[in-house]
Length: 293
Image 1 (cartoon, rainbow, N blue to C red):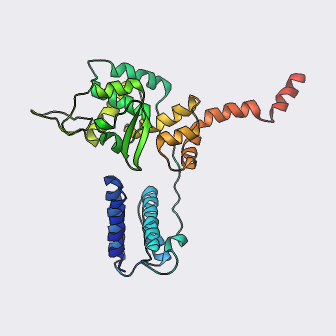
Image 2 (cartoon, rainbow, N blue to C red; image 1 turned 90 degrees about the horizontal axis):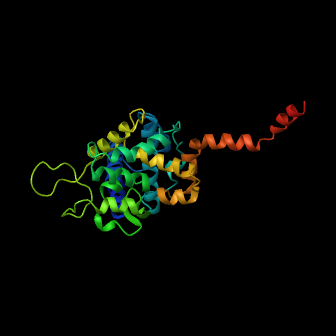
Image 3 (cartoon, rainbow, N blue to C red; image 1 turned 60 degrees about the vertical axis):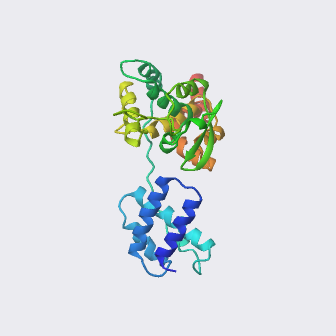
């Protein structure tokens, strides 16, 4: 089969599996770029794919292309669209230098409700959004796609990057959300109303501005990172710091593998590790010897 035929078949499968619009858009862009570079018979040789990935700009972009091509090759192999070994099994995965994203501290966390309760700077919608983010670690797409019928007694039903899921919800945050005006289309969040009738739905840009506004008001300084992801990452760090366990955090964050949760959040636990080290290190014998001297 030609590469473009495999791409079309794979994209159709992704749509049937209900992947998010953002994921489909990313896959489509990356794979059409790949098909344009290699329009002939699928698959190209591993060394050719490796050169293609290596010439892409940005380590995250290279890794994203690698994972997308691996997913497509795995799909094509299962469907027997080509013979021989999976070419991606011989392609080296790009290395990513891990970075620790900035998070909010305890002071910022305490100041957020105060700024969100000020009628001069806040509104109920904003309080509900920030409250929901800090209570559920919800992703951007999941929040924007939330419908009123998805608000249950003590949890919410979300749909987005990983499909459908259920996340615990606090009583107070639930009351914030249900106090908002109901929309005719069933969605929860409204943007600015520039005329009569139902206001437009809240979009990505509007959501980002809301998060940035209250983070800045609360004294957060995060190297230009002011979106919902900052609150999601902060949720995980503060959850573990408050003695929450890794397994329940995995379920709340909707990570498929607990190792993903552990790998991501362990670097944020350095202070706890230092304290544990001071408590349990065998090097304590020198402190005891010093006391004896």
